[in-house]
Length: 186
Image (tube, rainbow, N blue to C red; front, side, top):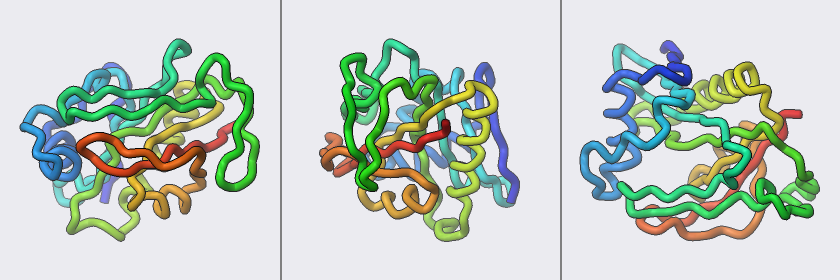
């Protein structure tokens, strides 16, 4: 297994997008091409490669100051709500661990489009991808925090990696139930 990365300004190979489609788009009935999303060329794209196959994939991008992390995904006919702590009027919120999430957590990055082909699950590949995304976000952008919207089934995975839930569960149209998670990198 080899962990590979493309930096902002670079595009990953087709095998990266093939895996993203198979894991995240095909199950939703989304058409081929929907796996390529706006900003892929300005994101960190990481994948664990096994025998020439992108077995696990993930993406991270710097969240612009004027953005709260909300996402409208036209191709998947879905949308994710904002991260309250990134809103300009945020005054404080407690996460599931009892920690008060502070204001001023920028620069911040967002993890999106994590997925592992079924035959490679449970082998630690996604953990390698996520750790590389975190390390590169810290190196490139000197981030103070990370944010993601996780499917409920993935919560234990992210929790093992040090991410914490906050706020109630919500439904992402055409995808299913999610929770917001964050991680402090200060």
